[in-house]
Length: 325
Picture 1 (cartoon, rainbow, N blue to C red):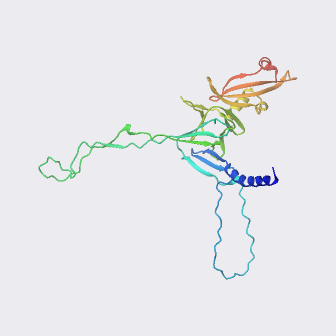
Picture 2: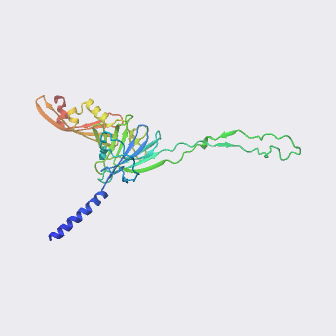
Picture 3: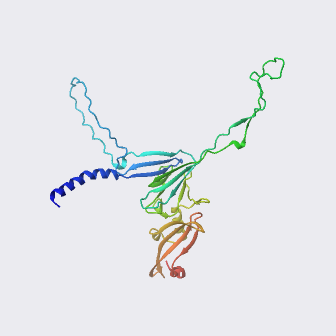
């Protein structure tokens, strides 16, 4: 290939790259569940383009003014720099405050880390409409049609208004589907209480503080109570024990030490016993206080009541566990 062709190809790449970079700009969508039950969608741009002004300053010709006496003045401060992380985001309200709604999060089917969420908002009951019994009809003037005389006009007689108890009805629920990067449930101070995201296909990650739990199950959050549950076709199973509480329970029961549990993997699963945390780690100790021994251990803890369902470990720890410290 000649030098001219290489130079032409280089110029062509320089022209195409800026346009292709703009096309590949990705947006990050966060679904925020606030403390009062309000649900908003926060859309940000990874390179900070969103929210930047594209207006240009156009010079305006003004008539000359008489020169004022020169005064010493400080130079204007330089314009503040706005990093991409501080670029204003677009906020889309989805659910008003104090509305009864749920957010269901489904694991993605691929590795794009995008989650499909379904927001269902229950409609408020309609106000009962009064039913008036109009059996006794009167003429507009209040005079009986069969009367031969013309009595003094009287007010028309009507029966009392009756409200039927069966007249209360509900409008259909409002269902909205969105594709988001993460779902964040905030506390009263605006800090995250729970964060749910996906790092790989068919898996969700629940983050509470420094504790992470993975699961292949769909999850559901009540926007008013922020309670977490596992939905199913029959009924939802509430997760009464959150991840940090589950780890604390395992530590208190002595199934794993504080040092061993830091490297443990936690998974939220469901079987015939219910919804459980399955904690897989390695238990270490000294046999008779002299010999170093270790063994893989698995602890299954109920996510509904916090009780240990079962513990699996090696034969050595099962038989000589009392001599291992």
